[in-house]
Length: 317
Image 1 (cartoon, rainbow, N blue to C red):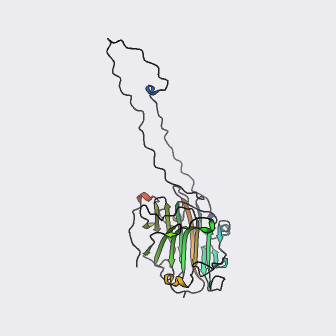
Image 2: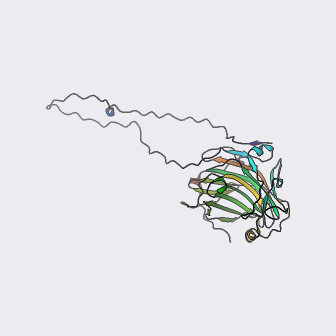
């Protein structure tokens, strides 16, 4: 079973022309003194030296964040145990309606299934499944091939996160599906616990019926979300709520406590309903490491923020 970690593509050979800069003799620090010219002699014209090169202003340096190397995994073998933490703990506070259980994670040749069960736990009457990278990642492109779980009350997610447990502010970037209506996709982001302009879009398909590629690019200038290689939503310029702290890559399936029903619907789902994840990858900003889009799309999408039109769609009511 193919599963690769920290394995960037072989670098392409590129020849860079060396630039030779010639310093004219007339600007030497040790220039000799010219002999005096008699007053009666005409003063020869001194032509201006021809510059040997053109000065180019230095390019503006983009901010960076600490980040683990790029990776890709198809989630179907035990090598992932050294790369992902399979969550196993309770959630007595917060919005999750049950414990995370490793029993809710199944791996096959096709990927990983994370299910939600009606099973009593310390946190409530349910259990969910979650996987989380052991390393943290910064600016770059995050991709997932997945099918969300279907059923009222279910949530299937793919996101980056860091928070108080790691000694950091709450920074997060989300892709979420509600099992109540899997023909819609939800995007959200947080900086220091405060959410930015979240967005919801109708999809031209039912996401629970087949695998699709979802992604987001996180850069100092903003975040752009993609569906099957096409840009769907981008943060506005100068957004004060853009995250600035590296985080873990997390994906999970869950249902919430009773007060969450107003958002994700009443928990009438069938026990054991699962979200399926076929591929997860990360490519650091400015690098072309192997990615899920290399396997899922016929042509890898451009990752240039400058060429991505800013979208202005508002959340669908």
